[in-house]
Length: 110
Length: 121
Image (cartoon, rainbow over all chains, first blue to last red; front, side, top):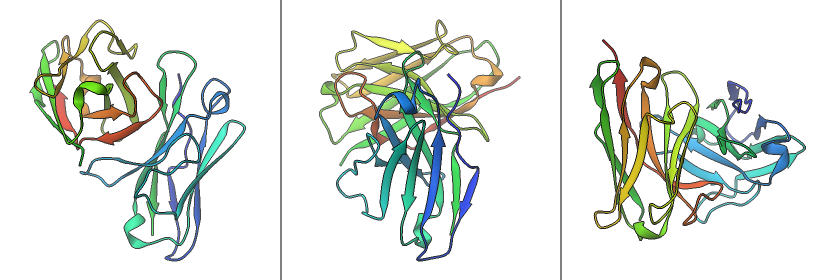
């Protein structure tokens, strides 16, 4: 399985909205509603923001939202804050081994 | 709250072995599947291995199949990764991650901070 494609970096100003894309194939992103998104501050434990394309775990800010169209999933961060500066990566379940395929990762700058 | 703490990383020569551990707390360890995920320097995340809640089923990425073994001791709330025949390309930060289900599931709801394994002569 090839890694899912994400932009290397995305930047925005405080208060703005940004969207990070995650592009795969019909064997992963397009084939299942099993895309999740994670926030990772280097040196810390990654944190799940979105699971199964659109669901937010309890405690995650409503400023984070997910969607999917065809083979591309997206994470939108609204009302950008300084604390959102971090690395973000997507994960999709896949039809063949390895069953878990990660995105290439995106560095968000605020 | 859920806490996962990895240990056992270090520097080893090519062909050598390392055993990573992940101490779990804050949840009923014996009822959830667990994963190992790694991130090589400057690279993205790569799934390594999974073991289901009771240890009876596991699977591996092709890149580590036959060299790495995932196991767990539910009496000690600890996950392990035995890494043999290590190669330079196995150099990475290794994370343990909790499945949201007893079996494989489709996302990881908690992660540790990682332990660094470096393979170099």
